[in-house]
Length: 465
Picture 1 (tube, rainbow, N blue to C red):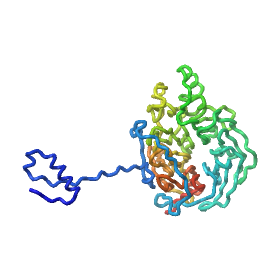
Picture 2: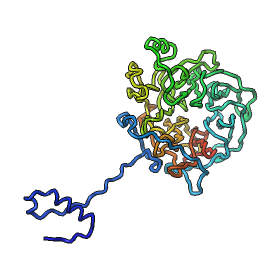
Picture 3: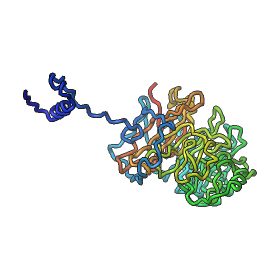
Picture 4: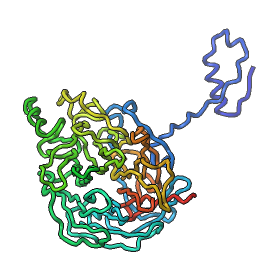
């Protein structure tokens, strides 16, 4: 018997089916073959094309590929002017608008107790102040608060509470403070040195963030590594390592990495020499103290060069005296092959971070959503959660990051989950028009986001009542 099958796909299916039949089966009329199914593409939540408010992420150490599972990419973005067709996306009930534009390299943003907004314009070596009435969508005051600094980044107010007397600023290699009185729009004095030197080495990661403990007795300083993975660090004997760690902390790096890839601590007057609070944190760009628990948190850029999906960046509570792996290990006892067999003594001493982010997302500043009232205040479900800015990838073949994410907490404890919140900065695989850096909660409950790609501060408000 012959039959005419016009459709090529059906014809291929019938031939493939008949080829599987035994002679006995061939005596029988074959059942109608099923049409071949096209595999459903796997949804990659990390791909910029799939980024959208509400897209959920939950990475664990079980998701880690082997080193070099993919080649290491050099895929830095071209930053272009915002296309006329570009728009930002936020969850239903929220609106996003330009709060201030024309800024020079806006990075960290912090809000004073009186509601004034301070922005580090790092490349311009200055701090800008903005002031806006509650509910206002643009500032009524936009002025230079202090200039002549040295690549300022971190900003903190001291003492904690409603009436700070100082603004502390983290320069690239020092911490200084300026006298402050609520309502000042210009610094009333010259910077006074609190910590004259953070590291002896230069180069490498240049951002330094600062935060005070809730009781005001401790000043934390985050200092990134001087390299990707301590490629030129010398070897030490076990005895020399033990001596070093007795002074610098478990897992502390040395040579040009001394006092780097760590969170350091001193007192607010800088009288106590800097000492190690936690080690192995490659580049803890943003730090913050949870106002409800007093725990220190950090958002961290991990190492490059091991492939598209290694090593996850992270946001985590920072435990005192803990070691987070760099440069020998990552995410627990996963050994970096570039330091194979160098520190087997550390394999079971590496703390796994709380929230793993898609590798190469480049998290920068993070902050807690604390607002309880105001015309732009977010719904109650957001209170206590963390917002973080992902500056965006360069070491990944498919672009990721370039967004604001919400890190979920349950009664102050991170669940490991995070959701996309503000997206839309990517044009295509080659270009982006914005790069988020800083996040802060305004006096009226709005979320402020600095974008050093377009020189803009964005305002996200909840408007559905």
